[in-house]
Amino acid sequence: MRIAVLAGGIGGARFLLGVRAWARAHDAEVTAIVNVGDDVTMHGLRICPDLDSIMYTLGGGSDTERGWGRAGESWTVKEELAKYGAEPTWFGLGDKDIATHLVRTRQLSAGLPLSEITRNLCERWQPGITLLPATDNKLETHAVLAPSGPLEPSAKDVSGARGAQGAIHFQEWWIRYRAEIPTETFVFLGAAESRPAPGVLEALESADVILVAPSNPVVSIAPILAVPGLRAALVGRRVVGVSPIIGGAPVRGMADRCLAVLGVPVTAEAVGALYADFLTAWLVDSGDTAEIDGVKVVRAPLWMTDEAATVAMVEAALAC
Ligand code: GDP
Ligand code: CA
Image (cartoon, rainbow, N blue to C red; front, side):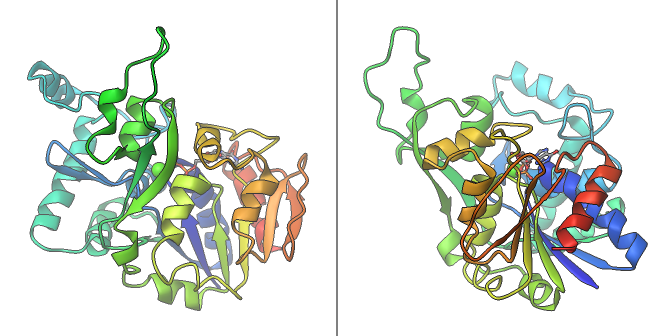
């Protein structure tokens, strides 16, 4: 059996731990198609947060308490950069993590595509699944900020943040501004000119089932679907999505702020409706309900508290 999974970073990684465990027990092959919209260049290094979250988590090297980056991390380079006043200072770059970005950036400079570099990095991490970036092309999520009105005396002055285009990289919006600035929408720069990375369409075409991980719908799954041809490859297939929203809240993180920008209610039903054109079934938490035209809604416990709970979720998704 072949399983393809569309995934963002942390939610995607946790879900994939369960998918991998299920696959090992059933001799199945898993390919994850991963968001690259968060990818960013800082201090000259190309950083791929979602690919790395999955690679480190499945490779047993992630910091499970902090929720991102490497276990046993140190921060010497970050401290030294701060002493030079080298911007950006708001982005967490650990020493061990930097080694990954150095290897990646060097291979990019040598002309290798991201999909091949990811395979090379995975030789060390042995994630037990195939990891593919959604595209080898540069596709970046940017937040288009609302025109700055008169500031409340207490408000943070972010008028300088808009830059020439009135947009900032998603990482800056998310980490530096904590998703707390008036925002009009998100754009996926480069998406229209991008192509699915080698192996992506093949993995979707040969999959017995395609799973949509409980990842952020706005900035993890949407940028994957924005790669031309990708969304169309899902229509008419067996596609089961897992809700990242439980009881009207995003469980962990700030996905609610991304949904709010688009005016989408923070409910399992509203998120499922974003995928209605290609979903066969939508898995919502036992305590939730949803009605989506043409989509079978199934209820199961959706808290990924540990691997066993996540395997049970995967089983429920595969039984849809
Ligand atoms: P990111 O790229 O690191 O932000 O991670 P993802 O986009 O892959 O996943 C983030 C989303 O995972 C959050 O917005 C949550 O809604 C969702 N999430 C996190 N933990 C759980 C969980 O235990 N159960 C479910 N159903 N969703 C979760
Ligand atoms: Ca992400």
